[in-house]
Amino acid sequence: MADHYETLGVPREATPEEIKKAYRRLARELHPDVNPSEDASERFKNVTHAYDVLSDPEQRQRYDMGGGQPGMGGFGDIFETFFGGGFGGQQRGPRSRAERGDDAMIRVDVSLEDVVFGAQREVTVNTAVLCGTCQGSCCQPGTHPVTCDVCHGQGQVQRQVRSLFGNVVTMHPCGSCQGYGTVIEHPCVECGGKGRVRERRTIHVDIPSGIDTGTRMQMRGGGEVGPGGGPNGDLFIEFRVTHHDIFSRDGNDLLCTMQLAMTDAILGAETTVAALDGNVTVEIPAGTQSGDIITIGGRGIQALRSTTRGDLKIAVQVATPTKLSSREKDLVSQLAALRKDDAPHLGEFQQSFFGKIRDRFFRQG
Image (cartoon, rainbow, N blue to C red; front, side, top):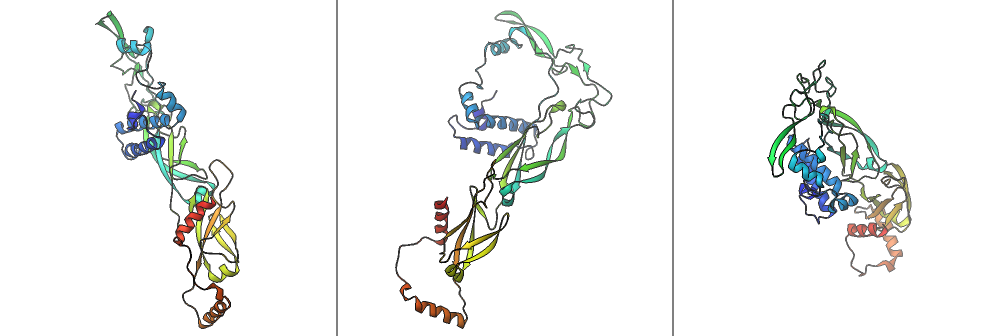
């Protein structure tokens, strides 16, 4: 068995993030939808298994201590290496044609609206399904596998070899039936005797709330059906949250900006804005400044595997009018005359507007 670290191409002291990056790079290269070769399919399965072990802290610790380490087998493995059979002379018998299918992975783009409460999606995948003609038997309808006349159904043949221990009888897979113990004389024409065919099928995906780009969901049994009608592998779905023109997110909080008229900033106002889950009333306090954050509690994103929601945080940008009528100019001049103490003066250096917003967003969080 290959070393999991070598499979992913990372050193044994690799961090979880380095392991995750290595897996994503190999998965993009070896995924069956990108690379249909049999070798790539087998490597993809090995890479996925290696990542499942090394991404789990407990499994990785057991593996590092020798629980899954190659070269750590017992005496049975040593005798099998020398003699080709099971420890104590036990025969393995014929192997089954039904094998577990490959795992598969697809990527699904979701909108920020889908992330708020979760959503449902129909996704089409190209995968291996059970052959409808032979139902996984690999035989042409009306026919059956016949017992191999070389190994007589055992799947193994004996060979006598001379070794350091004298003449030793070893067991090897039968070359006539490839170890199955039976031979298919009339393979199914539809699947070529494999018990499965490739087909595009639609699956139903429940998208949980609170996911983020890179979140991966496992659907057990949702992967490819195995050769000979064997059990399905698993399907891994990796999500990517698409860009939204108005809202962005910080954890489970939604962030946006709002243009506010100068008069509303001075006197205060009440307005209604369209959030991702419907309209929300916003109370604007009198004397609001550019860069102030108005927080609407519980109108953000519902957390993953939870019913709690983040907040909607609105950063205010006060808009100064550039074109005024004569009447408006007169009124502003009267206001300026009443507020002579507000003359321009030097003060502390201020960051850019968006820099202040960023700092206040995170300071509030």
